[in-house]
Length: 150
Length: 360
Image 1 (tube, rainbow over the protein chains, first blue to last red):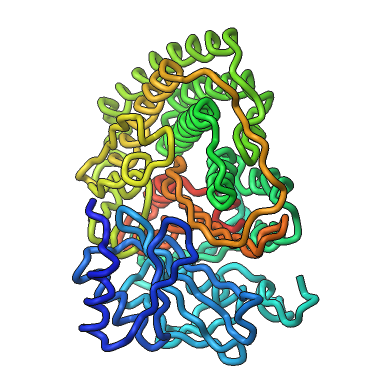
Image 2 (image 1 turned 180 degrees about the vertical axis):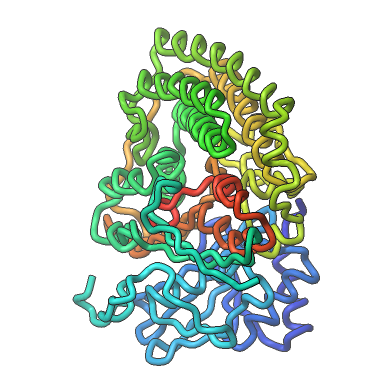
């Protein structure tokens, strides 16, 4: 399996979507791009169409101490080697387009991030809860609401 | 014909772990289904951030009751990468040996469950009897049948003595003979073929769309195995035969796992033959430098992914675990559509569900 050339991917994304992704170098031995939230679908389209990268291994949601007021999503793709896409959403209204129309396999990953971190994935039908109990009323359990929240 | 919705689970004799399904049927045809999980969600990802890396190895081992070792291996590989530690070659080989033995016992367990669902009680008895040999090997090496506590950051906790090597070789020899018998049944037994061939076929395109991994993907002709395609040592020094089948049906999923069991036993012999001498661990600092890492392994059910972010302390800032069952489960509603009611157990078993893994 031919690994993706990051420079070629960057150029293609710039040409196809007009956005300016930043190369994110903090993930050891893995290519990662920080992309604007509104370009997610277009970038995944480029990954699939132009580079044959179809495998989404998962979606990580997290909050960084260095990025207060943001919730970060990392889409972990794999094509012979890991390729990650980073998005930073405002914590007070975390919204991003759902990609299940492009990649149905993202369904459970989106639902998990929605339940555990309160992220809204737009453009998909509302579904019953996947992991949390129906009676759970204490908000997203993994979301840190204040510094002392662990 | 009127549509009827049948609730199955979360507790049901068919299921060994809690999972809730609602299956829509019309007469004998299944129209589709929906899933509900979380009954064994323990919040392990969150709990790891409240424990040290050393403690987390033992917590992570409890994610799964079958493939516990591959979880700790994948976690340790990530931590070691951030620490910049080179694990001694002998430790890498012992890790891989345990991974392959785990695959053998996981696949044999699964073959037994499938056999029971299709009415082949004898094969069920044989495979579970044979699986005991794999468990005996792992117990003989580590002291634990399922939770082996083999890994620590920097290597493994125990060496393999010459007497243990002899025991491992003997039991692997016996297992090879037993697995050949099971393979013969899968390939030739008309009852098993009748219940599995052509049942719930999945195309390679659907596998790719649903990002399905492991034996289920390989049974549909998707030629991916991380032991070959994104290996960590010592898999980069091994010649792993990746087994695929074009059919994509329940029979192919059965055959793939039996063939993979045979391949894993071969790899165990290669690992034992090539195992280098030397130490089995190096000392690792308790605090892990700031950084992020993604590690992947080929677990018995397919790709397992760990994302780890360290803030420089002795506890992870964020650990994300994506287990293979979660990837394969998303396909289930699609697989359930257009099958017969009688095929539901075969389709469910074909996925090789591990709900504890999927829930975490």
